[in-house]
Amino acid sequence: MAAKKAPKKGKIPGDVYEAELFRLQTELVKLQEWVRTTGARVVIVFEGRDAAGKGGTIKRITEYLSARVARIAALPAPSDRERGQWYFQRYIAHLPAMGEIVLFDRSWYNRAGVEKVMGFCTPAEHALFLRQTPIFEQMLIEDGVILRKYWFSVSEDEQLRRFKSRLDDPVRRWKLSPMDLESVYRWEDYSRAKDQMMVHTDTPLSPWYIVESDIKKHARLNMISHLLSTIDYFDVDHPKVKLPRRPVRSGDYQRPPRELATYVDDHVATLTGDRE
Image (tube, rainbow, N blue to C red; front, side, top):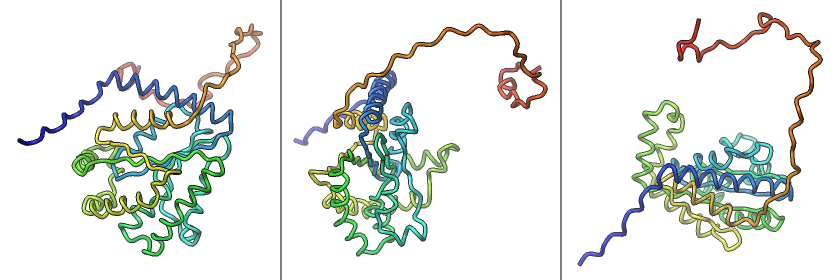
């Protein structure tokens, strides 16, 4: 008798998702204030295959956070000068100072993935990376940095479906690059590279956390909830702010005539039919 398949998980209802996302975002604001007040340094690494949902999750995390506290590091391809540096050097420049959170939208792990698969680094450089990375991350953690690493795992079919949806989407078409399409043909190569990376860098001190991301909304909630559960933050007291009463105007001020200023056109009026 054939074994029964596990039942498919249903997608979370939209209203439940929005309510829980907002609750988690409220907690992220509390985390931000704790980081700012205590001087903590937080690094969150987002890795995974193309179209795995990293960017959408980062967007939800930072939606209500201050850009002065939470920064996104999404580095472009290295320059000629950077190629001549120690590999980790350009990433070190983006690490947080006291009271900051840095979210790496791809990170030093580029060398374990795309650089390895596409031949952008030598086998010797790749092997050196695998040896040095646990030491590099141990140094960060021993210096007090809170480091979290998340791997967004998407199935082959779902990745292809997302690629196809981008082709017909004028606001997301830019996300589809020749490198993305190459990943379709090199699925197994990327799988082997990821497995090798995990063997060397999934350590007790700096573990990888896998996020199942075939359902984007589930991935976002699961990842954010997990992140918050791993940091022992607390509510920070804020001074109460009281709005003052509106002061009595002297009546001496006269606003310059509108004709002297240049205003933007009322584009909305063309949509609502209110243009005179």
